[in-house]
Length: 115
Image (tube, rainbow, N blue to C red; front, side):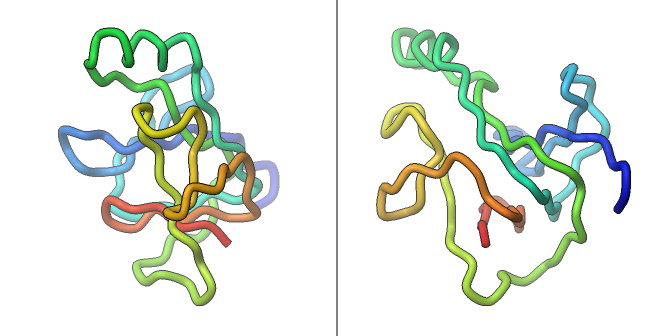
């Protein structure tokens, strides 16, 4: 989609849906399925340190990109990507490899997959 603005996506741990917001953090939508292209994975290290000290969760990690075509099935060859502030300072694949960017990220249910 030409001239689509970049958006941020994170998993809402209360609703279990993906929250879509502007880069200025204004909520646009919540979806069970979503897709981003030209993706950057961002973690606020300062807030991550706060989470580690307090052992309380708050939004401090998200994916940034442009809206793509959402799918409900895992694309062929896709790799699951995850984030836990207690395991790593970046998003990672399930085997622990850091993930900073991706051509596309598919948010399906409560999981994210990159291609």
